[in-house]
Image 1: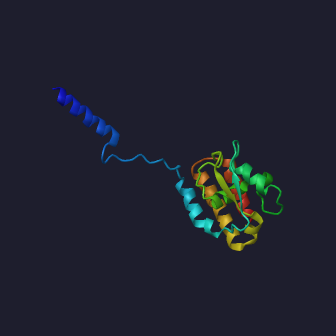
Image 2: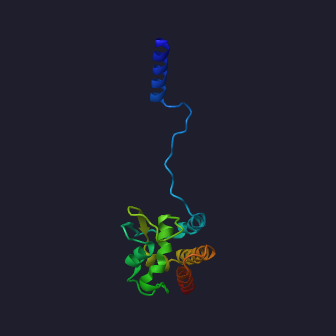
Length: 161
């Protein structure tokens, strides 16, 4: 009987050290992707000109709107983009490939790409891509019944381009 317990103990120890064969290895969870916004990115991001783009590491309290205001706020004659050009946040979504449903839910440490807005508005293909993405993101927000002020602001900006 003593031999049986010794063999059982050795078998259990060997099993514990090697793990269960065939058991799946846990994989890290990917960040959830907002599929409609991911489709907008796929359609329009390739048309942006990223020459001269800057990066921004998200700090606590940042939103895409405040980042857009920080980088684009002083630019004149760029359409009816709201206070300090904050409604240009979708251009950061496009350039960064960040398919977030809520532009206020960026995480500290994320690195965003901020394209040269003037360069892109001067490029007819990029300007059209920006206009279309603004309208499409506004429509996504409208259908999801979220952020009515952003829906209106994005639509007004798109119509002014």
